[in-house]
Image (cartoon, rainbow over all chains, first blue to last red; front, side, top):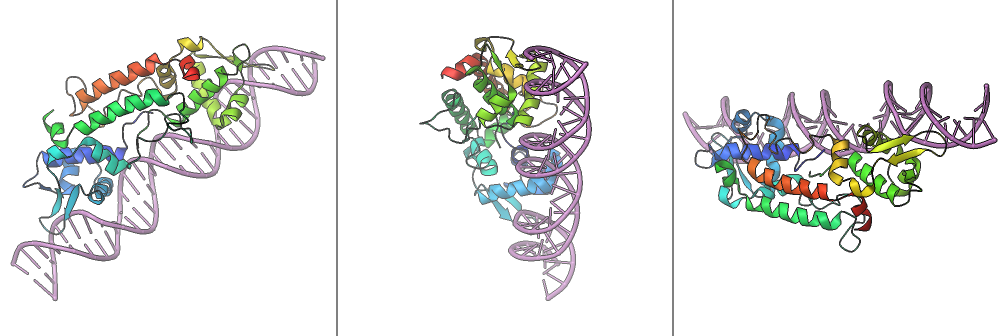
Length: 135
Length: 135
DNA sequence: ACAATCATGGACTGTATTGTCCATTATCAC
DNA sequence: GTGATAATGGACAATACAGTCCATGATTGT
């Protein structure tokens, strides 16, 4: 079935929306946002780690700690989040699943999908985390 | 990770492309198309059954039998195949995974995604099985 | 009628995704 | 330093998806 991104990515986005909309001084705790978003905490923690790896989140351990965004919510796009969580190449594979499909040897769907994908990615890259709050 | 449709649907599409491009009098056998497409036969058979259920394929049992398309390849769209295999509602669920997201109570991504999806579905519905052969 | 050849469908196995648990490390407050 | 509180990360469990196997039913040709 169709999916724009993984379940983990969905949790990351929902957590970030919740985090930004209620963070005190830009800091938030995994436990809080997961509880209030109604998403599984242990699993979401794993996912948030990819955002730390990707440099989008900063860890602040110890009491009063949590996570902090390394950028303003208006400078973090949906596409960046998706790629950090699901992998840089998540949108790259051939739609038909052909192993040797590329520009030179395109599958029947290649051109149509290349155009649709470009448009979709441009959209995803134009929507920031801040946009998700006010929309 | 991102997927336009399920693995099974991918197999169905590849099988149909192979079938139409080499069918004698519009009839083809599961074994043949799966072998030549390099896709798993037993699994693809299951998937083709959904196309029979959906009325897109007709079964012809016995020697010399196989499947037949109930329509011309130019009258069967990609969207119809996808929906028959992955379910009518495969594109309907909320992108953010919110259970109560709809027109009245839209999630932050709702509007943006509704537009993108409409465009994508229109594309998928404009591409016929015949198009997939000549593209 | 009989044998060969189709698809069908139920049970089963394998694998990837999703989800949980717990010991560990780092930091802060006292 | 000690204890409480953060995230981290490894091992593990549950579920969904993908794939296989085999007995069955329907049809055709002889």
